[in-house]
Length: 320
Image 1 (cartoon, rainbow, N blue to C red):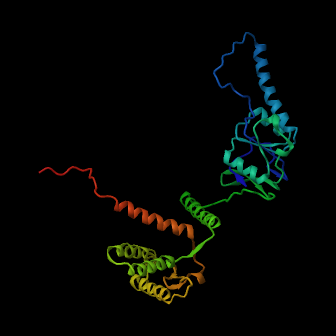
Image 2 (image 1 turned 90 degrees about the vertical axis):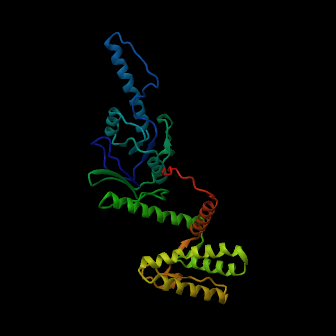
Image 3 (image 1 turned 180 degrees about the horizontal axis):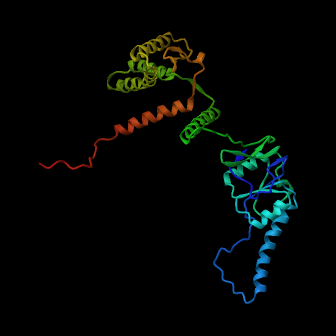
């Protein structure tokens, strides 16, 4: 796990093995009043007393934390200069203003529990599943790395690129790949890619349309033709003859359908060479949930357009 934060004090340790980690979502500084308050002070002793009370409040919070001997303290709020002094003196490394999402990931990775009040800290709240903490500089910024965690439930994927555009593209590709894995895990069904599924559906609809007479045959033929867009586009992207490739693919699927062998036809277009190949041998598969959603969305969009009986134009006609 890692996050983009530097230690709050220059004298704090930057490398700790088997650290004890405490996570907080409360500020380690004097709590200011929620409403506006005016205080009248008549002599300097009262002013010194107020400052001392603030310092004692912060000191008590720090002593409650130091009593559990953590090596690292991470909070979502601020850490005052006085608290930094006490932590540095006790050999504790502190991080402040960590995002809520990062704090939750820290809890899942290190086994710690996020605490809201320092007087409610228990030994079970301390995270001890991290094997190594280390600060590393990448470019111009410092990053905190928590590695060798025992049975972590969260992790960080570090992406690096030459420019921001390259990084964004890599992040989008990674996100797409993770979503594909998620879809397969939730619904473990796969279909052959390379336009094989679309062509098989197209042939099935054409054959079913031949059994229907009259106007009702139109939707079968129209949807069947629309399904061939995917293999046709693949052939165009490969730079091969579109008509020859689609015709050959259609003929193979039709022959397989007429043979009625009971096994699926996995013949599709190789996206690299444009040749007609068996997708099962190439290992090209697509999630069933994505294919289903694509077909459902396409048909619903067509139905919505067909429901439009007129178009209202916002431009005025030219007056003659």
